[in-house]
Image 1 (cartoon, rainbow, N blue to C red):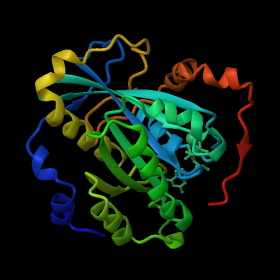
Image 2: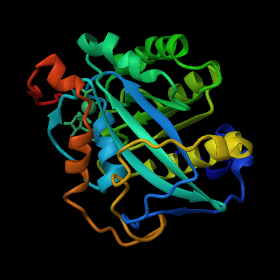
Image 3: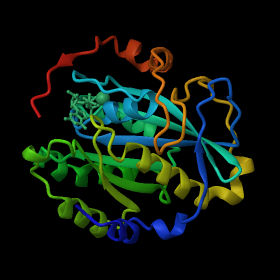
Length: 262
Ligand SMILES: Nc1nc2c(ncn2[C@@H]2O[C@H](COP(=O)(O)OP(=O)(O)OP(=O)(O)O)[C@@H](O)[C@H]2O)c(=O)[nH]1
Ligand SMILES: [Mg+2]
């Protein structure tokens, strides 16, 4: 496992050092100073939807409900004196949706590229996802890499060093291993990303208000990230379901179910 100082060094944490944060859990509060779009991309089955569910609901789902098109959830966080709304778009990893999900890359401020540490091919495919993101996203997008399923150490087929190597070689901002199952590094990653976003856009925040419609879909936990009480809210993903892209009905497809063998 990497030491704290390695993490500090390679994840550019110096840039966000000392910034105060507070996760906003008051669902009645829909005010935000600025809205930012984050996309999560990567192969099917690596855990993109589970990462989002862990962040938004603090829950984990054992089944693989294949994402059809895109879904999104939101997360409100105060950095210093500004409230940022992160609108997180969870895209379908399946090849058949590729041309559709690409449309949603547009306007993203941050891209999270993901792979599963238990499936080498998903790591190898990150290069293609990166290429695709570069061709469809704005050139100054913040890019980070996550190796998910870090709880499955005994099935690891991609080393931590390889993840780090990819990050360095491609000059990405940030790399971490996460577990949507245990929750490891999920909060930390999104909080760090929010801080990088804040640093990058702080002088333009007043231009970035957006009147998007999903103002109630913020996170349902109480307490701070370091040891707060976790209050489950069974309604938050229902709200998210409401926000699922019309795309699904347009495609006229039923959500497919499969059991992940990874
Ligand atoms: N052990 C473990 N399993 C995980 C983790 N994250 C996701 N899974 C499992 O991996 C499978 C796929 O998770 P999803 O989140 O649906 O994968 P996805 O990347 O959204 O897949 P698509 O929607 O098809 O692109 C499910 O069976 C999850 O329970 C994790 O961190 N650890
Ligand atoms: Mg999914």
